[in-house]
Amino acid sequence: MDFSTFLWTTFAAFLTLATYSFLYKDNPFYKIAEHIVTGVAAGYFAILLWHNGLVPKLWFQRIDDGDWWWLWLNSSKPWYLIPAILGMLMWTRFSKKYQWVSRWPMALYIGISAGIAVPLEMSNRVNKQLYDTMADLNWANFFGQGTYAMFDTTSGLSQLLIVIGVVAALIYFFFSKAHTGLFGGVAKVGIWTLMIGFGASFGFTVMARISLFINRMQFLGGWGQEAFNASGTTPNPNYSAWYQVFFWLLALLVIGYAAYEIVKHLRSRKT
Amino acid sequence: MDIFEKLMKLDRRWVFLFLIAVCVVTYAADFEIPVLVEPEVEAIFNFVDTLPAGAAVMIPIDYDPGSLAELHPMTYAIVEQCWRKNLKVVFSALSQNAPGMADQAIRDISDSLKVEKEYNGVVYPPREIVNGVDYCFLGYKPYPAIIILSMGQNFRLPFPLDYYGTPLDSLPMMRDIQNYDDLACVIDISGTNATDYWISYGQGRYGFPLAIGVTGVSTAQYYPYYGSGQIFGIMGGMLGAAQYEQLADNPGLAKDGMRVQWSAHMMIIAFIVLGNVGYFVSRIRARRGERR
Image (cartoon, rainbow over all chains, first blue to last red; front, side, top):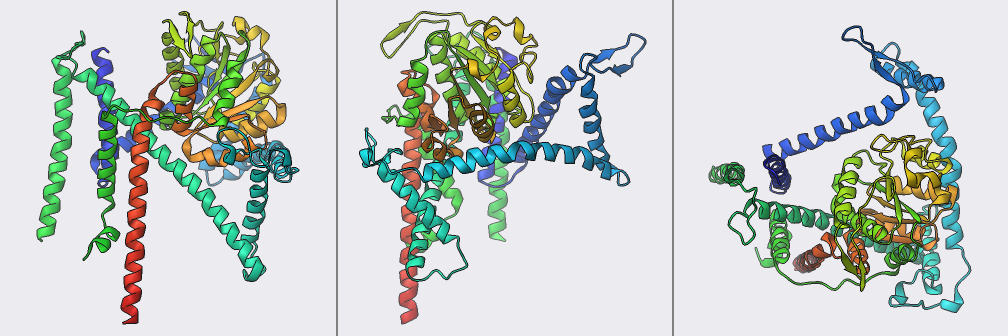
């Protein structure tokens, strides 16, 4: 790793720690990290759209008569002029007088999206799921097969549980009849089904959040090895004392801020 | 104030601190957690493993750096398996912050192919991975639904040029690949709602075999599609990635993180139990107090 790469990696390590400092409380380091992430993401996206969307479709050419840039339409596809104009009409949103014009491109966009989405979404996310819920019970493989027979989604037992769960959950959301008696009992099964579903999601979410922290630990571990490998068994030939100076300056900054916060906290408790 | 009342009023920052300490200590410790492989992950591995050399697989990298922790290990394990088995890979990136990251992953995995390695008892000789021959990186275009639909007609419609600015027709591997019909399968690795689009607008419209690798947060919501057969496999979060690494005999960052996952989950379960004990004991005491 050369020095400039190391500087950027060290900066990333600093931003990692700055972001996690929010767990204690909101602070200037966290704010810096938050604003950098937002700004970089927005800038990257804008440039990406320019080079991947606009430039290949609308040909830009520099006219050699001074410092002006001219926009030329890609002559082989003149119909690109239509979406280009519609796209530009979106900008009329910024004018109080002409913002109604932006409804034309929006109407076209929403109309096309809805036209494409409705049949495909109905077919693939509603109908196919309904067919699967109403499939014939798999009596031949009722208790499942393999190591995880209990969780075999193709088993008859799984199919039965899905049907019971779906019906009970739907009944729970049926509010036109009081949830009493048998109806109330089934609704209770429905809420249990929902809670099991939420529980599964919660478990996966915990795993996801811990995964992010693990990744940051792996990153910091790799960075630390690079920074402090000078006297190790396999010294880094690119090592420079500047690496450690840079790290300690950053550490000093963070420790200094933490000390300031602790002193402030203790003073406020006294008063 | 007794212990149960203290538990109920414990500052959450102590929980964070304790969790960080547990994670750091476990990460520093040197032990392994056995990873049990689920059938939905095994289905993806077996599908890729049984493809003939020269077959083409599409791997859309539809995630941002925010989901890198969970999804990058999946990408690394699957792509390395594909290239070791001489499969061709078509990459795309339908998430705006993905292209740079995908490019970096392609370079890293290409480098790892340069050394001889043994996976599941089979020795694979070193290989030079060549752009246009072994892979094609299409890059990014906005509006995933439209892009997925138009790729079904021809990859050249949304992507006349690849990510590096080369026309698709001048890439040797793309001469035989026009649309999804020429691919063995699509394995979408996604941290966004692009997965929904791949299911509805891709698999639903064109009927190709689709498998997905998704973040832990969204795993549960995609299981119904596995049950209905709309996807033939699913990898959920870091655990799914670790299972794939286990199957591919290629341990990486996901498997390395499993011991931390285990300890963190154990700690969180312990805190949930303690919190509930504190809650129920305080409630019982409050009721007794009311009766008196």
